[in-house]
Amino acid sequence: RKEVEQDPGPFNVPEGATVAFNCTYSNSASQSFFWYRQDCRKEPKLLMSVYSSGNEDGRFTAQLNRASQYISLLIRDSKLSDSATYLCVVTRYSTLTFGKGTMLLVSP
Amino acid sequence: NAGVTQTPKFQVLKTGQSMTLQCAQDMNHNSMYWYRQDPGMGLRLIYYSASEGTTDKGEVPNGYNVSRLNKREFSLRLESAAPSQTSVYFCASIEPQGYEQYFGPGTRLTVT
Image 1 (cartoon, rainbow over the protein chains, first blue to last red):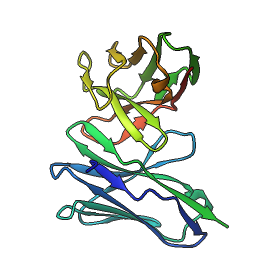
Image 2: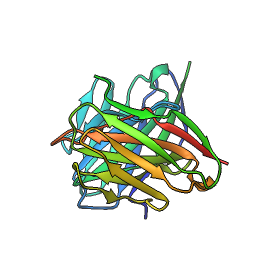
Image 3: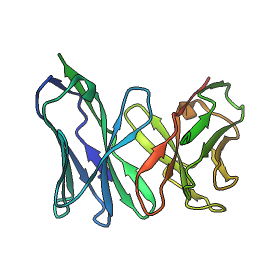
């Protein structure tokens, strides 16, 4: 089993749609969890941290379930500018492990 | 404040040639990282340096060497390039006590 697994995508959605990304991780000793966003041919950038209590940043909601070793990202009211690849990231000590990413394509 | 810078942005090498990818950060971060990103493979850690003077292997270190020259600079060297090393290489650093990694813009390397 890969350490971090994500839906392969791509997800094609119309503007205004709600879309959810899932991620599972295999190492129960993982310490911190994040979603990064990567635009085409650009470097990854932090989107948001993920907490067990759930956290929201505008249209984005992230959730962590430690018991199930599952992380999610919900995007509401999708915009064209949300088109990107979303990377699930787990950390243990100073090492980050990235999922392969899920591509989102938002169309008019 | 430039963040993380990488040079060069693009490079084409012939098999067997050597080169060094340069990375520098101006955020006073202790930890620095080198990743490669290939289609369908995601980001894979090559080497990292938790602090000045230390380096450790990541997931895919074979064929690479690194040098943590000082706190700011972390270089990646390919001694004898192979076509399998064609990839996009990202350098990153991480803030103390935090986990946000800041990435450089990447180096697109092609080995023919």
